[in-house]
Image (cartoon, rainbow, N blue to C red):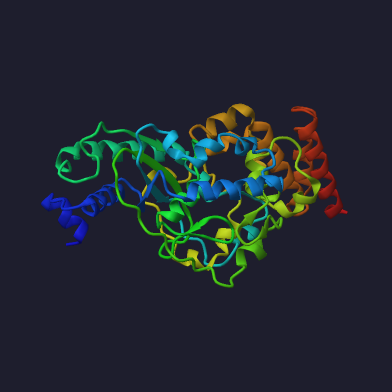
Length: 379
């Protein structure tokens, strides 16, 4: 019997660490792989503001104008949720099948539509916030058991769940709370579980001690920097979002710079290359959450099938999916680029013509580019 199970069954709480063990046990029962604890007054927040301002000065944010806003809340998360004292940082694995270690097999299927693995099922933001709320309600039922401890359990209980839904330094919080270290690709890596997981936060009024950060283990490895198709990782731990395929296919509105189009290959929503090549992802864990299971064949769809979707089909097939964020026209834009990069095919050229003149100049420009790319290969 583990120490966590012992604490749960015996229901004895001698100090704040016993409470943390119980909360971690409940989090794992709800499908979270792990959780860590961090004060809302931790010094990292002011340090991260300095890093953010330097990053913004370089213009790396592209269309992410929200990164210029609410710096006062990023620097002082206590102001985000009145009465909050501790942030419970959680991570949730999302892989449903194990990729071949240190291999980008997506390149071997040039006619397939590659969608980032986190986005093939339900929108994780909703899953995360729902389960964080369940965790908070479980905690609330235990407050009476903890009032002899100096953790503010006798105060009015305050909580609020977040998942990429507020001006919060999400990855630095998880890093400082010991859930992993920040890799050179700027994603969090866990020594026992790689990086194929998403993050969330539960702000609470409990006063719990901080967890300790873990040491980084990237060493001299530069695999993620070397593999990036668009050279978006400009230095270790520094990403130029304007060049990142995830940014270009999801966040960027309008025309995609020609200099990135061939490098995008067949990636139509997000990109996993820097994670697929990472040696730590040989330890990546499969998800315990059914909602990450691919829907509508989005783990194995060919480009022409998705290109033939009308807007009604797009909306129906992406209901409850993060893919809907990109919008129908930008979805077609991304597929047009991928079709231009696909092996030479008269069928593709014919299909590309079917959407010409239907959705505006921006899409037409990408279709015309793709047709020229195809014709060049055909000739």
